[in-house]
Image (cartoon, rainbow, N blue to C red; front, side):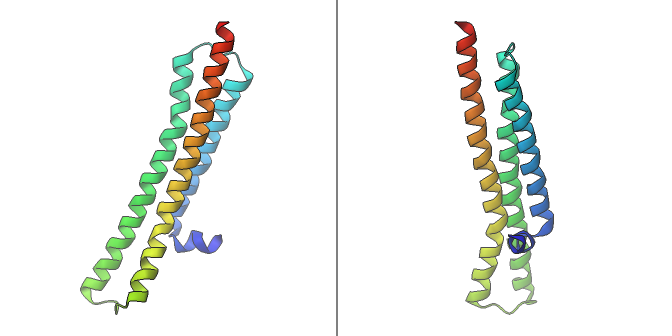
Length: 131
């Protein structure tokens, strides 16, 4: 796991990990409001819950950005003749460049699952309070 972190590039992987932890923190705080407190302002709670999805989407975009910057650097090195190119080298480069994208996609999918469960729980709670 540590090898993947360093292979993906410590800068982008650190940013993605910070986004993962912040997304989990926001989700934990919002789940506290949904499950423990009485829901008064439905629109305000939905707006707060949307932050979970937004952080996940940001992680996916940053993962793609990390891949694109890595590919750009690799292609620039090939163009300038700094690196001798072989098919194995290109395949390995593509594999390594996908690490940040897959990590960002994992964070985004996790945020969607959490977001969907919080929204449905909030709607169920609002329906029970309305009756």
